[in-house]
Length: 120
Figure 1 (cartoon, rainbow, N blue to C red):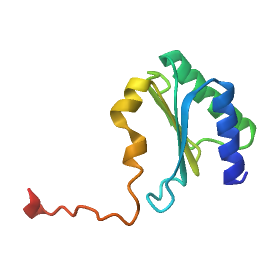
Figure 2: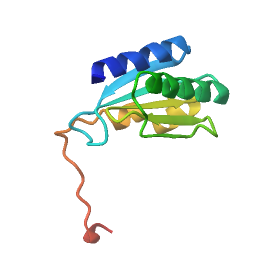
Figure 3: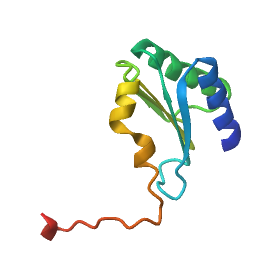
Figure 4: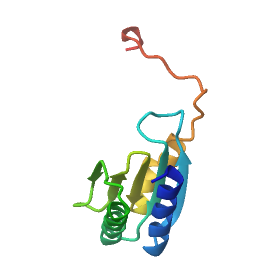
């Protein structure tokens, strides 16, 4: 499956599951872990779990086996790693606290802080 098809499958699933505040972040050039992060909110821990489980099920059904899932037991922050796309589903309070959108908005050419032993 092409990356754009996978993104669309995920976005359609999130929409079907009534996820809120869906954001797609293009992180190519910022990390080698994935090309895109999709972040969405659920309204309760059950909703977060149901969204993540449905994303996992539909991806598998389309032939995309997740590399891993995290947080399904707790339901505050669930992650589905589909290699080229990583899906984060969070409760709003958790999403506000970690603010992944801001974290990944730093341009790849921005200067990075270099820490050395002398820095401490």
